[in-house]
Amino acid sequence: MTFASRLSYLISFAPIYLFLKLARLVPFRRRVALGGALASIALRRFPPARARVMSNLARIRPDLSETEALTLCSEIGRQLGRTLTEILFGEEHQSRHLALRVSGPGLEAIEAAHAEGKPILLVSAHFGQWDAARIHLRDALGVEVGALYRPNNNPYYEPYLAAGAAASGTPLVPKGNDGFRMLLRHLKGGGAFAIMADQYHSGGEVLPFLGADAKTALTPAELAIRYKAPLVPCFGIRRDEEEAIDVVFEAPIPVASPEEMMTEFNNRATARIEADPDQWLWPHRRWKGLEKRG
Image (cartoon, rainbow, N blue to C red; front, side, top):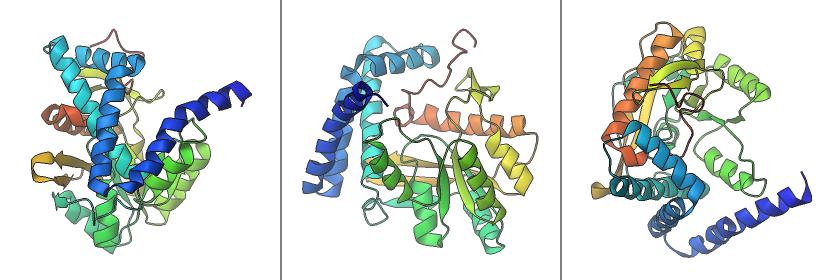
């Protein structure tokens, strides 16, 4: 890494570091609210990120006026900031701080597989409190759920993000060949693993997501078939008016072809995002390379 690159990363990390240190001076709930407020302002004021969100909204929600889209953009930033704050302070964001209300038929399938020593695969999206399912399974059932993880490019920010994500469950496996081998060993040993399948995947299959073609990884379905593991979609949905998070373990996706199984997941994720559009990670380039396709 060049000196210029390292300096750039250091400068961009400086306000995050300041937040991480000063935020500890306030109670956890206020800290999360502060993180949400700052992220909301940043998303609206940082042109590249705002432009990406507005472009994605224009593609999927052409019915929104510019004012409505900007308002939604602010709320997207707030929700994202809250989740990232909870993750960054992972050692504190366990069940004593997050009011989790758990439901769904997938929970029974998870409990049965765990009792029999079989592997478990959760498939989810960067939506709401996306670590809530792992937190519940570890704290309430003693099921440690690992996760596939993309290390952040900023070497100063990365250790904080990794430590926070690991606080919700281990092993935390980096994307790449070495990480994938770790994932396979974990599943072979009857472990549980969570994969976020809502982001662009260069080698993925073109499947509909939110009504538009998007490259989607088939890996979760392929692994579920290979290891005879239940593939359980799960979502942590914020309910602000009740100060709670609904952790929903949906019915396992029926075994079919990988393409059919991941189409089913995309459909379920789409339904969640359409119901609460502010809770999804809109800044991501989900439709990269397919902008001209429907």
